[in-house]
Image 1: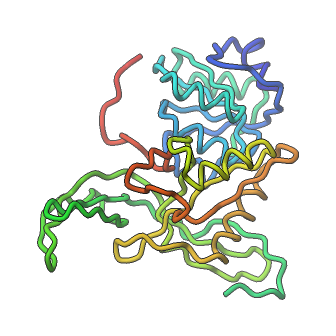
Image 2 (image 1 turned 180 degrees about the vertical axis):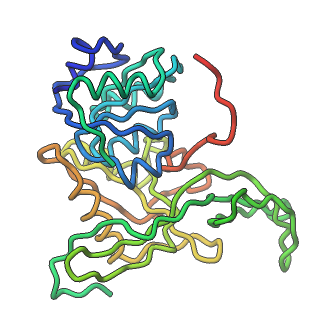
Image 3 (image 1 turned 90 degrees about the vertical axis):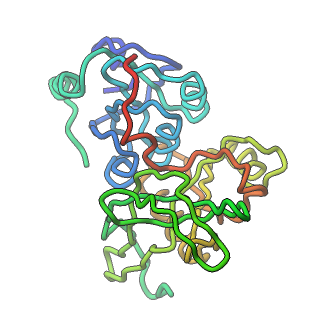
Length: 112
Length: 177
């Protein structure tokens, strides 16, 4: 699966440039420290966090996509920073559990 | 500190949750930072020598050490407070200048902020190398690298708006979108 597939096949709404990077797992956490310690490169990160230091954390561990759940608004500076480092940010009104189910049914495995 | 006999492969170990706590002395305006392992960040005011320390903020974070998966050597990182990503707020800051140079090469700089007894000190070079090797080893994107540099390269730490990797606002309610 690619980041682009999150838009075209799973209908998550992209908030910035969508890449064609490969993803093969999913990581769910609202703690940056968890991401630093446990997220794996090539996984999509599901979170309610929208602060731009989420992008710094995603870039550090090579997470190519973030899905912001429960309709949280993502600040413009977060989106701008995501574009700079090549991380695609998606938004959805779904909660983490429903997103996890969709990702699992699409073939992604849990990581961390 | 680190044996050259082993081609180390590092991983995080001994992860400990806690809080990065910032205190300010309102007499001299000095700031200091420490890590608290308590369940809630201490907010008591107290006097120490000539300083009157007041709680100025906190954020959840994590402490960790690094262990080599080959030789099992463990390197403590008690002095590491966190990693900071440059946002380019100061055109003359060395971290900013290095970031702008490196980003074109797909090398991403993170400044290691390190404190001992509340005072900012540089993380030893050996530890910077370990962090650089560890985070770079976790990458998958071809050509991408992580470079961890000393926090002292920041020209004006008091005015720096860099993004420190800590959990902001996790104890407060966030507005619904």
